[in-house]
Length: 171
Image (cartoon, rainbow, N blue to C red; front, side, top):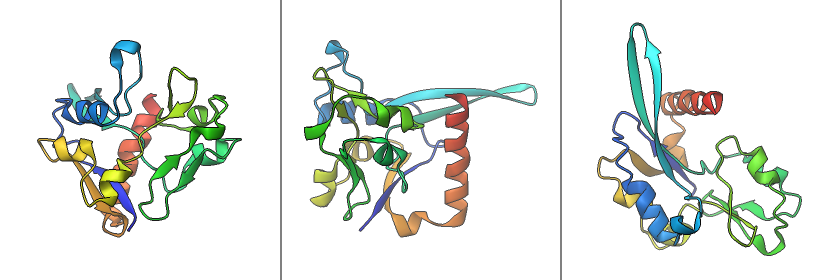
């Protein structure tokens, strides 16, 4: 079954529980300047005479037509047929950063060895019937993992597209 991460900014408080859970699950060492796979942030914009703040939890979106896959000259990235996640095998990674340049969300990061790494959707957990660490630890329910068919609802798709387009615009 193919999955999609669904995010509801109206429920997000930017507490960072999702990011901390992701760092723990993936053994991210912030002290060694490793970049986390998931971050929380605030987007501020002016609406009429008021400022509006929207909190976001951002990681790899596991895009249906992931530009990072086609950008990688070594074939390190691929779509998992079972989950729909964008996964990677860095055996042949040359650290060229082509995938990072192609990704509009800045998902690929690089380890001390110079090889790419990124969110894998906690694919092992999901295959075992568990929720990804970020979803499991979100106290407000702002993050969910849903079957792709459920997510394809037109209203959800268009609302999420507006959010993602805004993020790309402000990047």
